[in-house]
Image (cartoon, rainbow, N blue to C red):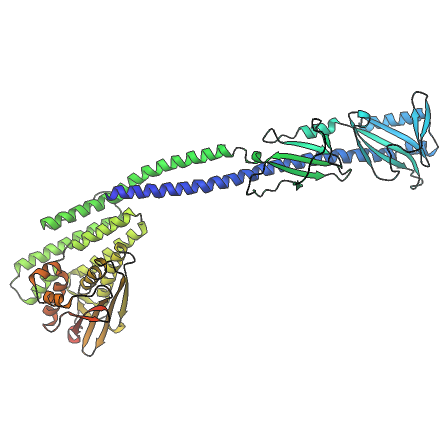
Length: 559
């Protein structure tokens, strides 16, 4: 029964622990993958942004080189140049800068001269070219005359007179330089793409997109690595180029930010299931190792209660040191009991001291059996640290109880003995009572007969709180009054029946069988300290108080 309950509890705890761990692990993994995917997208967006910016900046730089070319400056400063000389110089520049085309139009005042190829003469464009503003700014045109180029145009200022415009230059950049960047953007899903917009948010690229793009909610620069509380359908990242106010917009599906999440979650759940299986196997093995020795010892104790035969119990192999010490303490106690019983049989007719030792040695194994049940009950609730505390307290209880065969001990050890008992029972009956000690320090080294407080505390606990299911306090105190040491055990539980207690103290046969501990303490007090020293019960303000007055002249003998 104990083993089955312990296994069930351990499996429940293991399942809950792994379940919670898996839950939080998957949440952390989801956030981590979102962060990793965000960084990946940001790297791709930044790379595309830098590439397009380099293309645009490169176009302006090449155009600036054309405008500053000394040979071209000389031709334009000399008036309207010969077309052949101008063409040769432009072809040379085109080859050097590796661009699609370079055009230069002479300017005189506000008139722009355009070469008429058919008539082979210059024609004056009085209104300017492309409605162009004649200043230092650059003007960009996407696919002019439906050509597969991007054209950048700028006025040419004379190097001899920087306020004089002597021409207009244009450089054509291959559209391929832009499309390779736009189309090379590959996200985690099919719905991820880059697009290039003009200053009015009209689609330039990709070619399958037309019209105007609605930019209502978007992020600037890059995606935020902070995971949103709600998964968004689409994420937009917009970057504007300084050269022409064109925009590069990255369109990313919100679900693609969690790519591979399901795969990793499945792996995490599989790992949790494997750990659960391993944990269950270990639970069976470890539980059996812990409970089997306790079960064997409990069974032997039960047989002792029935058969009244006090034999040694051999500890099984492979048990822990705490449980082995419990077996050893029990066997030592059995040796003491057997020795005391043997002496009692041999010297039953001797003086009161021998009878006192016999009564003191008749330790009923019922408490040890209940303590082991307490340990087993705690093990079933998986309170391993508490088990160790109970075992240590129990060992201390037996150590003081045995006391190297001596019948007396300092009061401080008797107090420690009852503390150990109450600590053990606090685990068996948690939150049922509180123990308080009001001990006069001047009484700690006084020598008293042993085991006179623990039976009283046990009686207060069992009949004051356990049977009635009440909660209260147990107060143990010591003080010196005149020539006597006064010891008291008080409790706030169910009030004692004084008439019934008086019958017990007067050796009522029926009550003596049920309340052996109280009668035993009372008999030993009268045997050791005289007939005037006995237990006294009283009721004071709802508290049951049992006290004893021990003569000081018998408390200073050597132990």
